[in-house]
Image (cartoon, rainbow, N blue to C red; front, side, top):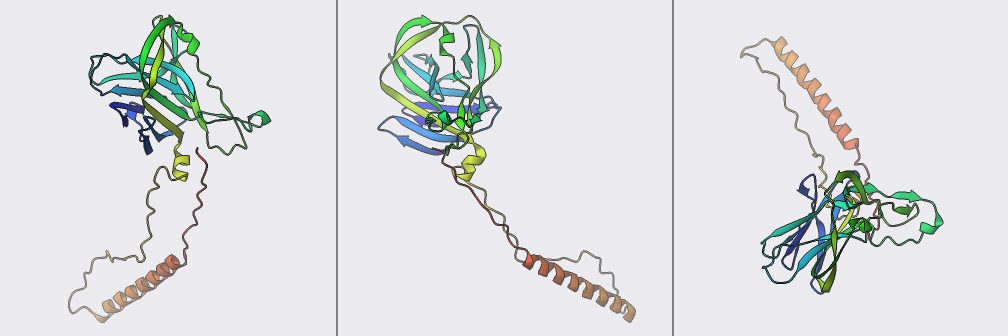
Length: 271
């Protein structure tokens, strides 16, 4: 979870907050950013909690998906630790569809070679003081969910936000609002495929298990040789020990001849 100026924000999948990595905070702009792992096909929800002291100002949280304004919600003025949740986008005044991580479409069309993807792969929550305006139909907030990235692009943006299952809701009207001054807090979640985050060192790689230099061989056979046993039993035991010693030497040589596999990690520009 990200925390700043008395507010908390997080992204959850399957009811659990996603882990955050490489958190950076700028008090000059009231902004905190991080990286989160995304998985294509997974629905997600955005949460924001007001942990500040109650006041007279009208304060709300707004969600921006891949650079596009989605919709917002007001914090209840006197409700301590009030949390707002965003998990759907309106496609009409009666129908919403869930947020879902999706794959971007690759294209070889030259017009997309230099296309800017600065906001693609990014979910942002802005907390602001508000001045409320007139009501409007929520269908006006429809998100663009068809994103194309040129196949030669150096940007590692493989996921975008799409829309999933459809839900019928009571007829709804949203209310326009205007942010007064700079945002009180701005939370930016940069989402990428988990393997890309690992390849770029944002998610720490687990320590590799080292092969033991030597292996201890334990004889699990039962020693039932009695005192005063015959010489023939001693010979059998000697042959057994000799055979076991040769087998151990063969295993030792095999271990020494094995070489560690080379590891190649490709670093990709995530910015």
